[in-house]
Image 1 (cartoon, one colour):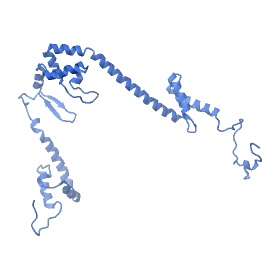
Image 2 (cartoon, rainbow, N blue to C red):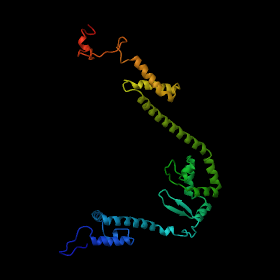
Image 3 (cartoon, one colour):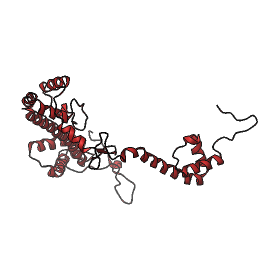
Image 4 (tube, helix red, strand yellow):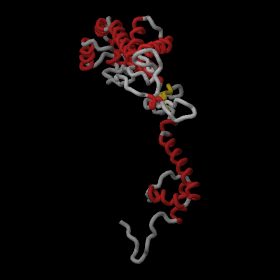
Length: 295
């Protein structure tokens, strides 16, 4: 470990002289702080203290790092032949989900397709066992199931080439997958029915809240009206477009059965005891009451 000479005080942080040398290095194409033996904390602190320096060095450093990343794959991107010596002029261009651009040799691909040979005994036994267990070919060759990856037992090229190379294995596969289409249809329809049932449950839940919002808050028991609406919808006597009108009808019907503006006995309006009787006086209706209801 290097130590400063006795009596020499080392300045903390990044010095102006070293920062200038770093800037020259970045202008020359440098893309890392490591050759300058400066930590990112010190570099950031110096940039915060010197905005003019930071305005030049940070974009320069970012551009250099981006250029360095491109140079990492320059060896492969500039190759004219694959590892087997075939030309890559007419290669297949493939872009991965991560954004990487790859070139696949067309000649090697054709050789793999034409490489007709039977499977290894261990793989053959594993594939036959899966087929006897009613596993699909898609599961054997590792196709994705609803976006989820599955392990690849045998890739598709080897599987189909093995069927070409071994007629008995091909007959065995045909025999085992004879009813695979019907099984797939049953699975597909079961998934569809499950989705429809889930959507129906969601619609019913949404209908409940929508109908509940149409009922005035003053109604003490709105679920009674909601249940009557649902009964009519399920029985086919009410269309969804007419729900709002039917809610208004039930609300008015309930107000007639349980009026709030009229006496419990009789049909006259309720009167407030605090109501002022005369415009030129302070007397209220309560002042004129001489006896109670049950006197």
